[in-house]
Image (cartoon, rainbow over all chains, first blue to last red; front, side):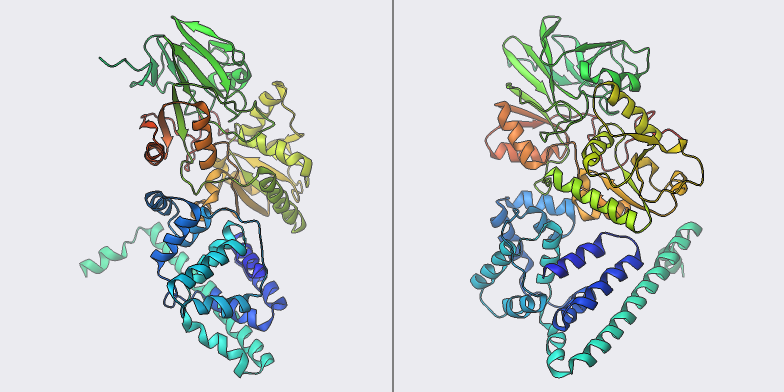
Amino acid sequence: MKRFAQLFTEIDATTRTTEKVEAMSRYFTSANPGDAAWAVYFLSGGRPKRLVPVRRLADWAMEESGVYDWLFEESYHAVGDLAETIALLLPDSSSSSDEPLHVWVERKLLRIGTVGEEEQKAIVLEAWRSLALRAYDRAALSCLLKVGLSAAWFWAAPTIVPAPFFQLVGLGIFMAWVIGLVSAWRLATDAHHLRQRLGIDLRRRSARA
Amino acid sequence: MPQKDLLRATEHGLYCEAGDFHIDPWIPVDRALITHAHGDHARWGSRAYACSTECERVLRTRMGPEANITTYQWGSRTTINGVHVSFHPAGHILGSAQIRVEHRGETWVVSGDYKTEPDPTCSAFEPVPCNVFVTESTFGLPIYRWEPQSETFSAIAEWWRSNREAGRASVIFAYALGKAQRLLAGLAPNAQGNFYTHGAVERLNRDYRDGGITLPPTTYAASVPKGHDWTGALIIAPPSAAGSTWLRRFGQVSTAFASGWMRVRGARRRRSVDRGFALSDHVDWPALMNAIQATGAGRVLVTHGYRDTVVRALREQGLDADTLASRWEGETEEDVVAAGEAIPE
């Protein structure tokens, strides 16, 4: 879990695509297949249905940080992202645990969707306290909490498909995805800049047409 | 009839009618008491200035050699038209002061900008008991909590080291007055190479050194001959240099910004720097609340920053709090570059 949080921080700490890719390749060469599968899933940014209603997360965060609701709203307004707001407000924790990512996801995160509210709260609070990650790491964690059960494929795949095959195919898919994402992003920003430079307003044009 | 406020905001600035003087006026006046030399607090053109002794050099650099400046030692009392005035360290930058104003048994303290963390480049903040405390609120939200500064300096040194190993120069953007010198002093024990500076920073370094502040050796970047290998260098430049052609000379660089705003990821991304280090010369949320409490003030007036939020939080704690309109900006997220700060090189 810590190693994945570190990867998240490394990716976040640079604006250079090559360095982001290097950080990911360092992670994937050392991570065990179970962790790597989950990392691919999270990094590819799937947004399946939520395990815990956002409102509940916010309530627990307020309770844990001792910040009243209006002040939480103001903070959220300034940050613009709920996971990050929670991460910035939670008190620093001194304890720490280092479960592998897949163990944490499969034993805790995925269980959250199947248990009652009280137990959900216990799991989330325990995670916030004991993962004891620094603010950005906690932002990563809160992002994970938004992730849902449609991750089942990644969860099931390593047990059905032989591991080396899975690793190879997984890495292939992943690299293709990275390359695709990078070129799409390049094209989109280039087009955007060009449009800005030439003063083309797409909306106006289509409205006229 | 309720008693008139000792200090009130006018179109010129914060005005003391009884003493006929202004504090940090934004329009030229006859007599200006200055908390510190940042551009939003020390404006050019007033007939007479008063500041702390520690502040004189930097204020003169900003106001020009002709400016009429009277200085006061920390805590020494002076009387202006029957109003007692004294300057007390605010810990923000070199010479930054809280101004204490006392008249007919009522004491007001104007904080200017302040921080309570220790800083080797200026005198440490001291709480001044008062009836009315005028406080800044630049980082007045609970999301702003600073890490221990030793950790921040270690993180900067680590970034510098990894850049050196990758064959790059490190460029860190920081406000030329105050933050730049705090960075130099804080990084000196952990230096990974030589320090270079932008002209705006170098000139203020001189003032700091003349004022007896120990800074590591720095080289004015423009004085370095062409063809120099910048690998492993740390260059400190004002935020206005970001994205400018001035940076080209350094070849491959990694960029960073040192500011409290960097606590929030979105602020860092908008800057499009590689790294953001949340190093601030302002109080964070817990320090702000503690500092207000430590003054023992029954009434708190909140200026520049998250005024409304801080006022509401203070009221919920049972304090008499209100906002005070000012044109002070604190450390704004946008580049506030005071006159003379961005020297074209």
